[in-house]
Length: 526
Image (cartoon, rainbow, N blue to C red):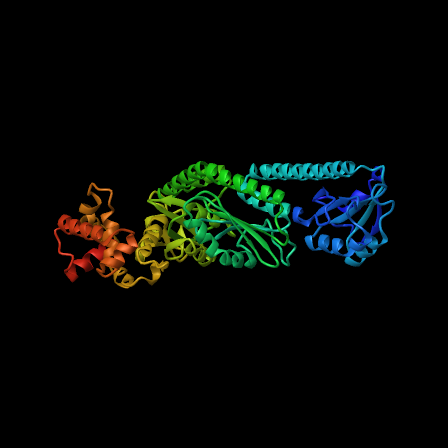
């Protein structure tokens, strides 16, 4: 911040005496301008301390001269005595006092250049202090970025540095993390869990600006201002956006701090990609262990990451999302934290039954979600021991009954149920609500599984990257409507037509035959 007139007049060696406008001495002085013109205002920008000896001025000129300076917005007037005037003409003191313009008498022994140097030194000192504060702030932001949850720590630190708020947004504009240092009621800055209502409202209000940044041909930032708030929005590469707001205008130094935070956030998010990919591979291995019934090995593997298996029984979610990292992060910050694992291009989430609906609602914000029946037991993988044969009986949908409890589903069945439900999700579908499950429950599970394996074998063995089974499921779930099925799969309808032609050829069946469709749908649902 520029030095004030009060600070300048307090410099003892200058011997300056205030003659008028004492109540306005806190005005900042941005420069010193020396002029002997009767009207120096065309050469001023405002905020200057104007110095003159009054060579061309008399007492009659005081009113118009002072009025012009005030209209230009100068900080004050310094009148040098001992040359053109022995003392400051009283008319100047009266005009300055009346106009609220500080008037300072400069003695003969004080060169104007000395005042200019003093102000220049003060300005340089202020700039150095601001730069030092900016470097210190950047250091604190850098240390925050090195913490375990670097992006979250940077956002929290940035809000404190600017005395405002900060939002970390995913590519869709949804809130990943919010921090508030404005002292608003119910402040939860830095806490984990769902974002505050103020953060959600702010993110919604920024949607048009986010859309503009997303469509910009090159990276750019936006600055917004209202009577009560100033906001800056910046992209973070392809990893999302961040926004900061302050009740005060952003100074150049504040902009420097905000830009530094943006660079650190971009770097942290990009560098964290490899770590996230490695962690995802570990979680995928954990899912395979659970499916194989090796619950103990899965638990030990997660423990090495500081994680643990969810409390049983669980409900299995299969999520299709454009940003699995954002969904994983959101679910990792939920209460309780949820295990997520990539699986065949999807994200699998075994959520504890008591919290399943909350997890479903959160996951639906990021894409489509298929939900299994509740009561899935993670210990019932394909290789798990579930007790003596006399204590087990096959239940509808692949579950088991225990001698001392109700029905349970093994993880493989829960996963399959959620995957089938996903085919009908818009954005959420639950297996228990799918039509036709009552009929399937009447079929012998082993016989139905053998029938399904045999009828679908040509599709599963087909050597192509195209998933003909998934394409057939989407086609039948859409009741043969090409556009709806193609949209569900994210392919062109001509691509789907080609796939269905290939399915018909491989199976040797007419897909327009209702009986064939019924058989195939039962096979897909088993």
